[in-house]
Image (cartoon, rainbow, N blue to C red; front, side):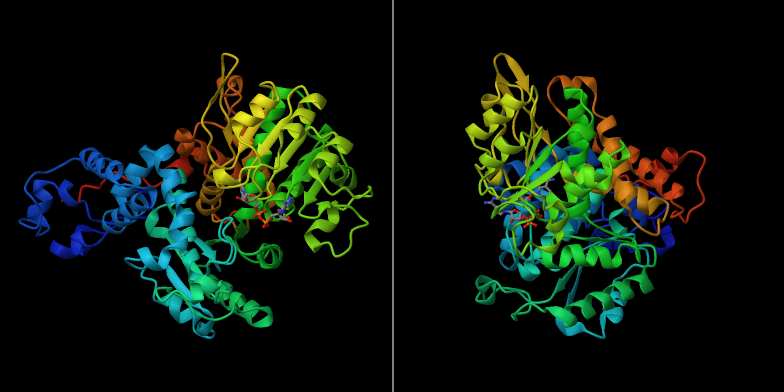
Length: 551
Ligand code: NAD
């Protein structure tokens, strides 16, 4: 356990049935003989004492027995509510298997079904009717030590749109990844949903929907609610990291700009995505041999992910000597109406910086042919948009074209790994948002990279929390991207893999956290004196799901 998650002195421990009902302390059948005597558990448990590893085996057996992923999600959620340490033991040791259940893609289905699979509340619900009362609601949260909040208003959940209060599965899932991937103590995490209504008819008409059945709050009233929320969080938990998650475009960019220099906050959809993609590009450059400043990047999709990635790539190009204008001139966007160019009217504010002087083109293939990009990045949520012809063109213009089909879930990817490899004669450097299996091509095994944000945000969060940074800066996301790319081994690269294996994520996150903390010290944002051994200090802060001896 880290020092931020102290185990209560045995005198303060609940005993008997209360202890078995406390998920942070419960060890179930693993309570030792001595603990059973001392803590009034005798007779409340079957006699055989199991190890945590044996308990984990039982969980996996049940997990495998479930008929579908949603049932597996429900099983794991119930375990979390019963025995949090065991949940994290199973998740951390089986990340490849567990991540698609506790997060995308299954979490999307779980959100859509939230009102129907609901068992027990987890996290805090603040509604549009709570204006003037948010501080008192926060006071109801049972612990004084909250270090990481993930908050959503449910308006743009994954690629699924406005899910209202059903979006709660996302802060819950993201915070589970903070713990599993970076060892942020579960007792210090707080998922929050701001229920400001929903405009989705299906939920308004669903008798089991758990949220407010009213149109979404907009304008001044919405902004006032967010302001009150941020102020209340600052008052109760001054150094807490607040991660905005799955807000719609109209609010995401605005709120990020408004709060980023006031509190410790970031938006993972914008900045986390940018960082993990930037890292993939840096790794890919180790394979192509070029420099970032010489790349021409074409994006399909100009939303939170696309613009966020573009902005970070621009910063990277500027580090290599380009001016802002020169760097932006290397980044091009195609959105639902075609190439983003100056002559287009009614362009959304966030696209203006990338509206270049160029004839209008309405389709991606024409844009590829006109611009001859070195990298194609898909963040459009539109499947099958990287066609055979487009990938072939990319392979014609580049020895090793970067083809990143990042849209989630798998069914939404712009192309599959197999398509990218086959159509480029095995030369594409491929990354996706959702996992694809390795592909055998002409006797070689090619391993697609998964540009999963979970490589970045847990490590960034750990770094920021460990040294109590006042803010989260773009420089930290750049440092995280570089640190992640440096952790890709030559062996990984030889297989075409541009991210380290997910199973190493805790080690990877600790190193990213250290790089992020270094930036905080450089920028004067850290409020904890610099430890001599920063990496050692950060590791010492990481939660370990092994049971403490409570006897
Ligand atoms: P968004 O809604 O903010 O943006 C979507 C963009 O795609 C908009 O600019 C829209 O105009 C454009 N678009 C829609 N239809 C199009 C079409 N037919 N042709 C071209 N452009 C089109 O969403 P976002 O947050 O930017 O996410 C976009 C996608 O990226 C999602 O599928 C999401 O799953 C994925 N994503 C992946 C990662 C990752 O892999 N790590 C991270 C974040 C988002």
